[in-house]
Image (cartoon, rainbow, N blue to C red; front, side):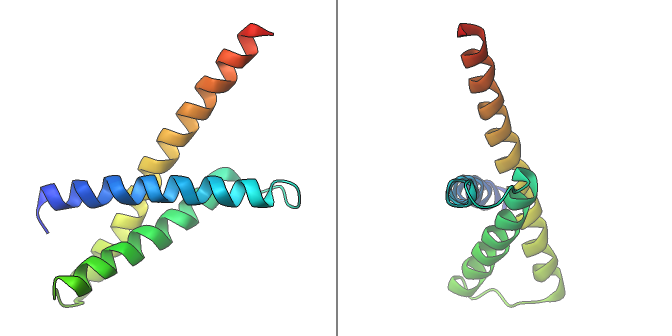
Amino acid sequence: MNTTMFLILLSAFSVISSLITEGIKNLANDRVNLSCNIVALATALIVGGGGTAVYYQLNAIPFSTNNVIYMVLMGLASGLVSMVGFDKVKQAIEQIAGKRK
C-alpha cells in the first residue's frame, strides 16, 4: 500500500466511521448514556480494520503479521481522524448556538 492509497482509505474510513457513530448515537440517545469517544473508537476499529481487510482481499495481498498490524493501525488512525473532526464540528456548533441565546 502506497501513501496515496493509505490517505484515500483513511479519508473514506474516517467519514464512514463518523456517519456510523452519529447513527449509533441517535439510535441509542434515548435509551443509554454512551461515551461518544468510546463508540467512535470501537466503530473506527471495526470500519478501519474491516475495510483494510477488504482492500487486501480485493487486491490479492496476503494476510501476513505485518498486514494485520497495519489493519489495526488503520482502525486507530481512522478513529483518531473521525473523532477529532466530529468533536471539533460539534463543539463549534454548540459554541455558536450558545452565543445566540
